[in-house]
Image 1: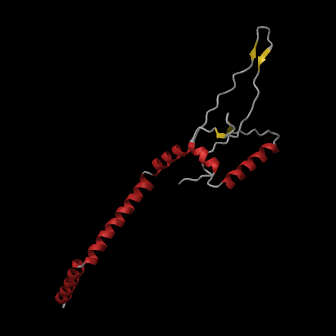
Image 2: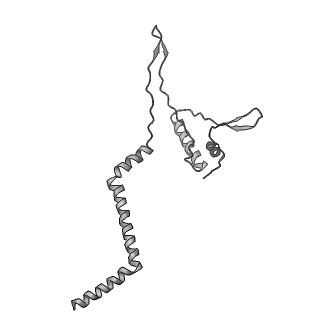
Image 3: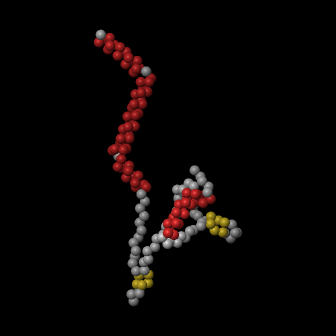
Length: 153
């Protein structure tokens, strides 16, 4: 009786092991475990290293020099003194895909500055040349295209 059951099991295993579906199942199982192993390596074992690399790529440190102090003449009169001044510079990096979003950000910035009693000075990068034609004065072609509203992807 046990031999009959053993024989039936052996024949069933031979049929299953010889089929294409079994071979595919083995291949997919090995690929799945390989993927899980790679994910474990990236998240658990080397996760801190990847996080450090990501932060170093996205974090930008801006160094500002300290004040130098007052400058006096030989009689002790102040020739030059330090006055704290702040400047906000907006660079056109192309982060805003729509002009409407960029304009809304600039409007909010102007409102905040005016709320605190600051003045807003802008630079329009267009001038008129000797022929009376308007010329774009920015140095990069990408900035010119963004100004004109030409979006290239």
